[in-house]
Length: 290
Image (tube, rainbow, N blue to C red; front, side, top):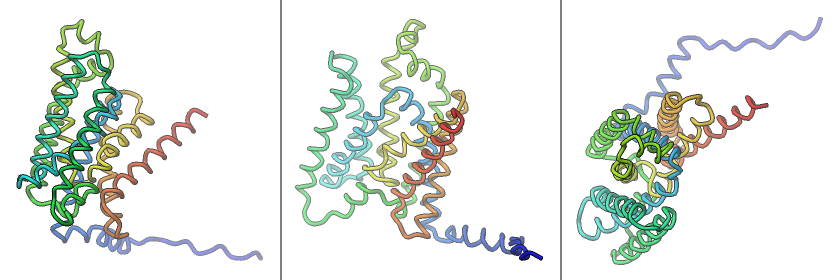
């Protein structure tokens, strides 16, 4: 007789309940509760607005706004203002400035964005140089620290998510027209310039509020990657939006939990989880084509 087969491992309901209990044990900590709610809100928000960013090929713009936030945060610290509020104001001003020069001058959008990108970074570094001593707050905004979010940060993230997502779904048809065929939208009577201004402001608000989650360096990735992964899988716009939102939520939750148990920085772990999903979606797309 041949060797007997190895015994089959059966996970009992008691063991499964114990595993789930361990997985959700992190919710007993108030800072993890705040981090989870903020991560869900920002993951969903960035994914939804990222769909339109990728459709409009505005990845460089979102990156420029993220780096412009450095100057706003530094100015806020220098002037004794709330850094997030200062970043919001500065990012909105930069977004409006980029849109105005792109619409009103003959300069190309990438040229205008490059000017604001470099100018904001230079201003931020210059203002940081005026600070006395080692500024840990500035570093936390640079790399993100979701575990230190306050109740006010959570409320702000939820409020902004409700506002931005509500506006996007309320006027999604117009935004899609402007994103896919700007000239046709104008022929149909759509004020494309006004919607450009509105969308830039919404994107600036999204970037500035997301800084506490993943930081200046990675916030653009949280906007772009879920939408890019969804484009590998979706067959229509509704599916694209739904998959992007789902990927953003999964990346935030799994990345946050993984960072807790592996003792790694939360922001980079969340973004890496989104990258893993993107790679999997890309490989799945290649397999379907083959």
